[in-house]
Image (tube, rainbow, N blue to C red; front, side):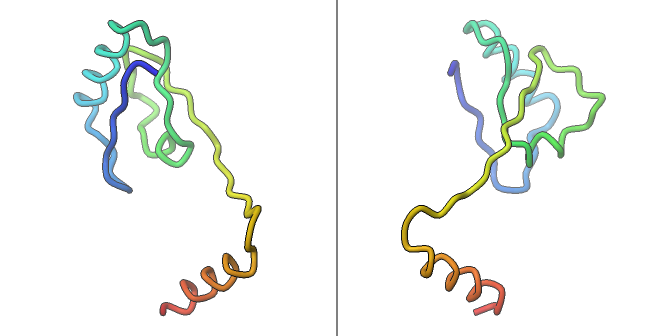
Length: 80
């Protein structure tokens, strides 16, 4: 990992900001940018950045206290 760039949820950095980040990472030896699949989908296909973008698919698996998890999901669905 050469560097990180964070933005608020549902906020895509501008092309110029992402390009500057890509160029900075490239100078540090990075060969790719990595983001979540959710964020990659937001990027226009015509953006040609200095580095190619790889996206990660993420899944959540509850390995402990699944009842609590299901109750929390139900609470959210009920808007409480």
